[in-house]
Image 1 (cartoon, helix red, strand yellow):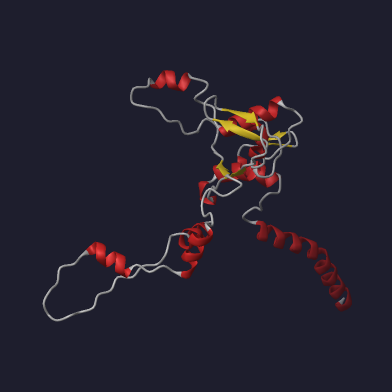
Image 2 (image 1 turned 90 degrees about the horizontal axis):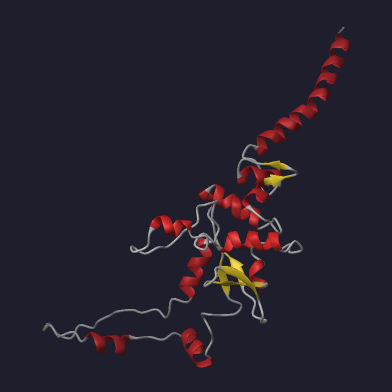
Length: 227
């Protein structure tokens, strides 16, 4: 992900520039920075093509909406110094996020079996009411977001949201075959969305256990021959 960000930034950062000067005698001369910039500016062929043909580098279609991924009751809220903290937290509207409203919409409409990333293709986020509204036009937005594996439970939550359709709550994501897991990581393991850290050791132990009867039979056969 970091490599993609770097490549995008490097390609669209603009034309390259170089600063140089030619010595003319030993007497120091006043530096005109504006004139120096105008005479030293170099436009590459790629930038010339972009400007002539008017290629779009930003605000391309379809738009991408960054979807929030947060743990239960750990969403980010913004308040002003004049707001009363107790009243602000007690306001139910303030606690709504795209993720919690995604759960609520999935629970309300039972036939809705969409992934969190697919939700923006059919619904749009209303910042005023802080609810999802059905799209009335043909504009489609792609839902996206990045969570680093080092963030622990938040990363495993995002992993479940990428594969579990129509979840109705955080508890729903933790439930696998009627069993409520203690963590999102355990739920992801039970869904086989990732492997355990000691998967290689378990595989070798299983292989050894399967080969053990064969080794015992060979040992018994050898003992019988010598007997």
